[in-house]
Image (cartoon, rainbow, N blue to C red):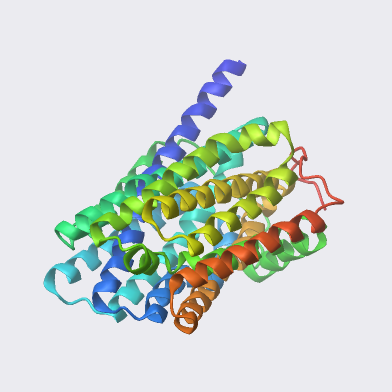
Length: 413
């Protein structure tokens, strides 16, 4: 019986990861193609950073609502509809690029619409993890989900996006659209119902949101983790939003090779996903979290001091490995601590703070680069701040254990 259960679990996880891998490949292609397209329209660092801010702005505006929705509706269907919407939006963008009708304003609007659909798709995918795997496999499943994101967005998507953009500007947008459509199709094979809210009594969306926020505010450990994750997100985005300018201007890479700079980051990220569960078993989740944040700072800060392409790409790989290890810890603790009926709403609050910090960090990074005169200086500032946040994390969590067992659905903080 247990073998049959594990077989069914493996199949469901496989379909979820396959869809995630394909959609992340589309994301990776788009996240390189969009800034490269913007760089052909303007070299203003604030406008370039503004694109990154626009892509993540929906997380600040809609993550709470998206989290409440995925606690009410079938999470698989939510992913399907959101991916189909993204396929249509990017397909329309491809038409505009091919006809010469694209402007920086059009790029901004497309990024905003894609980001809005992404809030629902990614929230549903994350909440589905504990529904398709056993509790003792959460760390492994979170690492695999992180690996899918890394392989799709940086290891494959980045190089494909930059190479195809250099050949024919519309090509990466066509691939991006096809990736989202295929991701929606793969989810059809994920059998079962994945509706979050099972009680018969309907409730108002506002009441659901208040209930989820109240749970998080009362849970001291989760509240501190949200603050730490938000600080890491804001501070690292100071530099990451300037990566295209750092690569093209400071590291002197061409548009065609920009994606291969991110490729090294993909290798580092995969290493982080593979090593994180082993490090956690040998030490603790808390140690991996705090030391991982410090390593993020060392990688980003080192890039600010050394712009030689091979060395700086290696340092970016260190940053990627560390940030993935941090995310594995945060995702596993969240899945272990938060009851299933609150998971979507707590994730909504989490991503409102963490991903909502991205546009703020991106704009601050653009202003910082303009003030300091070079993106390398922004990388150095970001690195120093991240090291400080690593120390703050160790202090803020010293009385808590992150190595907790999963709670039951009715558990309260």
